[in-house]
Length: 160
Image (cartoon, rainbow, N blue to C red; front, side, top):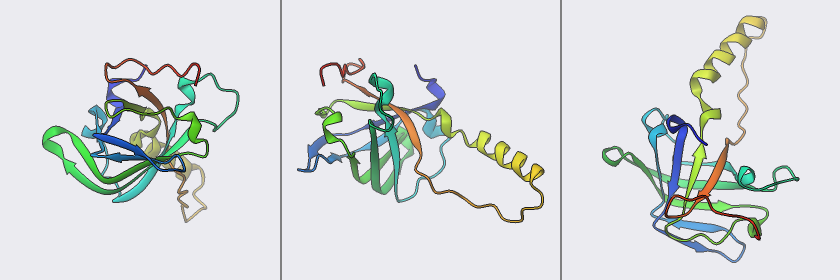
């Protein structure tokens, strides 16, 4: 399913919901093998989570959620990055099932391999020497995401 090298997990101690469907995580953290090579996170940032691979979907972007965090705390001795605040929002809150405190998310971060990005930028520079300025596009990162139960089994969205 996901190469172990690119596996990132989002885990939490407690989950609650706001009236608008926003999911609030307490004691939330990243963990996984990819953290060994990850760059430092911004103190306040977000990424897009694409749950579409776990559904049979006919509508693009229908199962995209936005994971937001504030306050990054590194715990390198246990290979974790904790967040002071973390939440999950989506335009379609009914698409995300009710999460338990023991569920967790697994992200495939292979599309965000920075070594590939640098090589692509170098190729563009070689081809476009006449350009003196490189513009950075600030688009949120989007990762294929899977919801797993405490026992590691994939959550079954059928009937949701």
